[in-house]
Length: 161
Image (tube, rainbow, N blue to C red):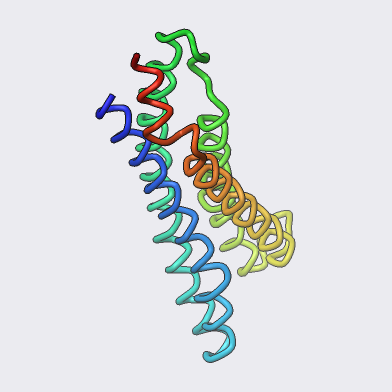
């Protein structure tokens, strides 16, 4: 019972932290950089922020997959769901957006800056931005679902009885 609360709270805390990181970088930091610095300098600093965020999102997604697996297994054992939960789908979606949007597209964007590759920098940047936006939405949805009353301690009290 108390253990269940810990895992649910950890999921809520980590998903909120991941969502906040994406929102802060995307809505506050990156636009501020481009408003205050030369385009090349802003691009370098923003690139570093997105690199840090991508690695942090990978860690958050792996930890959240383990946490959600534990929560889903417990619920499945109690006959209250399957091993694959909607929350797990949200985490997997955020993980996919991170891998595709940063780790797959960044090397292509570096080539495009040098005039190489099939796609232009602007096209790749737009796709990368779409993945980043979708990842933010997925993290926010997970945080929202994690804060729902049925995910909280009172639901676990009834389930353990």
